[in-house]
Length: 286
Length: 133
Image: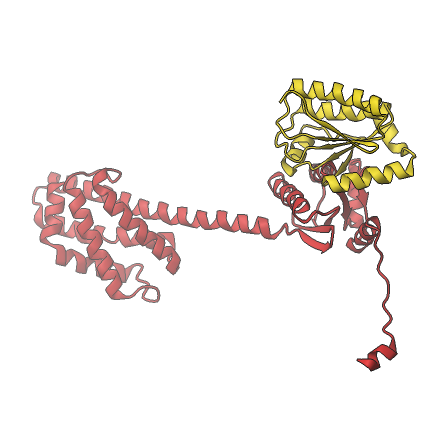
């Protein structure tokens, strides 16, 4: 490693300027990052790599901890700025050409040169891989977070009336989502002390045996806790599918529309909705 | 605690399970409860399990048994305060406890029992469910 870092140290200014022109030729994104910042990051990285290479050539070793940390920071901030993982990796890979040039001019023996080119190339590749891994990991985290948020957004438990909850389901029901649905509904029943819960499946495109089984489980669990659970929003096509599949919904109170289920819920609570006729004499008094 | 206390409230018996149920405790509750129903000629039994966090298949079956036995002795059982996690577990175990009336809390459970006692006629479907067990 000695030749590699010695060469870099001796030709730091040349390598840096070579690196900058390489970057300008390949993936320079002047719309996303300015020259001064790029130069500062490049110089800092070069310094870290040379210091680390002094003691070890293994990127995963303790000596490279600082370099790894710095690269991760760069990768993260680049992702936030809108760079693609490939562009982030090219930031490191662009260093190859100037390093090779410097090595070629200072190492005379061909076999030594080959060795140096190989080791330095290997090192830079690994560092580039590190930025890609970090960038992808960062993106994966975002996806997982968004999945969770979508899961919560798509299963809102709404209170229709004192003692009446509704759960308008949107999208396909799978086992993972059913678990969330079940838990959020049952928790909401306890929190709001509700006697009736309505599961509305207007937004569910398909109902197969598995989905029906999940729904029946949720309804049974609600019943065990002492709440009545109605199913509404069953479209004609879904009703046909359910009968064709031989799914038994006899124990479940079903209604075609959410409004019908709500009316049933109100009557179950002993409440009715009446028209209020405003007396004209009263209006005058006001 | 050796025994679960059974309180007499008018025509009804009130059982609040405050400790984790183990099998022996469940058996003794079953015996105590049936003898108390017979002794006081109670018409309703309210079992509150709001502080139970774990209910296994044995306890689930025991609850179903208690309900069936009470019905034989002409008493209606209401189970109150089941936690969401417990409800999910029982459903996953395939124990829907048919024939047991449920309520969200003790207050609602008492209302349910009172309504039943005032009505003084046992609903048809409850008997059918009991017979299937």
